[in-house]
Amino acid sequence: MKKIAVGFKPADCIIQIEAGKTILDVAREFGLSAVNLASPCGGQGLCGCCRVKVTGDHFSQRTKAEIKSLLPEELAQGYRLACQARVWGPGEVEISPQAAGEVQFLEIQGLILAVQPNPPVASYTIELEKGSWPCSQLAWQEIKNCLATQYDLGRLKIDPELYREKCPVKLTKEAVVTVREREIINCFFGSSPSPPVGLAVDLGTTKIAGYLINLESGVVLAGGTIVNPQRVYGYDLMSRLSYALESEAKYRRLNRDVIDSINHLAANLAGQAGLGVKDIVEAVVAGNTAMHHLFLRLPVDQLSRAPYLPVVTTSVEIKAREIGLVISPGAYVYVLPPVAGFVGGDHVAMILGSQLDRTDKVSLGLDIGTNTEIVLCYGGRMRSCSCASGPAFEGTHIRHGVQAVRGAIRSVRLGRDGLEAQLETVGDTAPLGICGSGILDAVAELYRTGVITRQGRLNRSHPRVRLSEMGLQYTLVPASKSGTGKELVITQQDIEEIMLAKAAIATGIRLMLQAVDLTCKDIQEVVVAGAFGTQLKVTSAMVVGMFPNLSQELFRQVGNAAGAGSQAVLVSLAERRRAEKIAAVIEHLELSTMSSFQEVYFSSLTLPPLRNAE
Image (cartoon, rainbow, N blue to C red; front, side):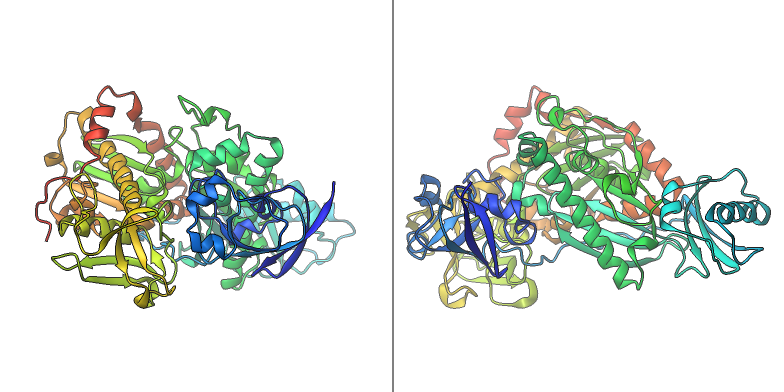
């Protein structure tokens, strides 16, 4: 196969590739996609997000998808869609700002739970009788004998990997041994660098959040997030599952990307705490069902088609090394149990983290994202469902949509006539685009000021609405005030994307209440979780009809409750049993099987009458 040289910027690298591949294929194959290129639609040419600028004459002809997605001036400047443009000879590819994976301002803070630490691992300092042994076998036997006599820990086994990693032929007279359920999983000869530490991971569709925790005290030593690199295979889960099913190699690539990212995150967190990754002796992972299966390398065919059944609905404990996590050689990973095809262990962690399983109120819990999970707690029971809210709240499928990066518009307030806009941006810089909370605000404000109708149609007669090649659009930021030098607009298509997303969530709420003969008036509390849920304005969500029109005092925005839940499960065996009980008692509701689904969904596609909108 003919090899050709293609340069990539801003990575400043030259890659030898096979002729005929798309730019997106190359990015996926060589790992450029992990941080530098997004493809929310999974490379189908639908979203227009994978913009790149090419130099050279050896690229394929523009496709219909490119002509539809790119503006004439962009086409003239050499912009292409990475999923459409094939490379047939030498050239250069520059990742555009719209596609670049700038670090997002991702929500990792959440509730702080008062959990009494009771971890599955414990460290014991032992005094050895001898300073050296002729062979490691005798040394390990001495270690076991000391644990038995000094701590009454008899009949212990030793993780086989320790025989390879540790060679205690010449020892000091002291050792710190980590034991997990009658198994020695780690050992430090001399003093231990720290108390035992664990890693809690919230494995999301868009982001991966990690927390390094002292298992004895429950104190968080470090926390951080990274963008889930699988986004290049599609922002929605079905696109990723479809990609995984194309071949075993593609499945392995999805799995490898997420494992590598968690390893990278673990190393960064350990470095922040002045530790090494081998000091991490326990890990907990909470993710939606698709991410759960891809992480554990479980079959996903049955998740991609009705009735969307998971392979397992119980918790899983597995050696970290068996799935490629590079932490302590004998460490285990505990993976929270999923409930159904689109209600995963992260939903269980969210319920636990926000204490919804212990409420005596009629409470509604929402974790809003590309896939939104809803739980209704009432009379000691819990019922959950999921709804495909889509990636619009992530800033995707929006004309000037961006994720929560510096310069993203996150709050919008319009004057009464819709002519003047007060904007807040991430980092208080000139606006570069609009993120999820901003576009929700904008649609609510356009409706409140009469710029759009109840059907979400832009008013052609408004002075800031005009007809362009992309259809009707409202000018939110003139070119003179934007950080790009170009005007930022909200198109009719953008509004329709938000209408679809809010309708999906509103439908889920209404059908959940309907299924148990309750109404909105019965709701005593609404818990809103997740990054987007934390940033959105509750009033805007009510104006567009995404949330029921209730007193704002009933709403509680809790941040990353799934992260808080996974931390609790990491440090406490009692919380693990609690999580397993939550998963076991949740009653799953499949919305699409309800006879009133279509009627409720279509009625939710309009905006409600304006009430208390100011």
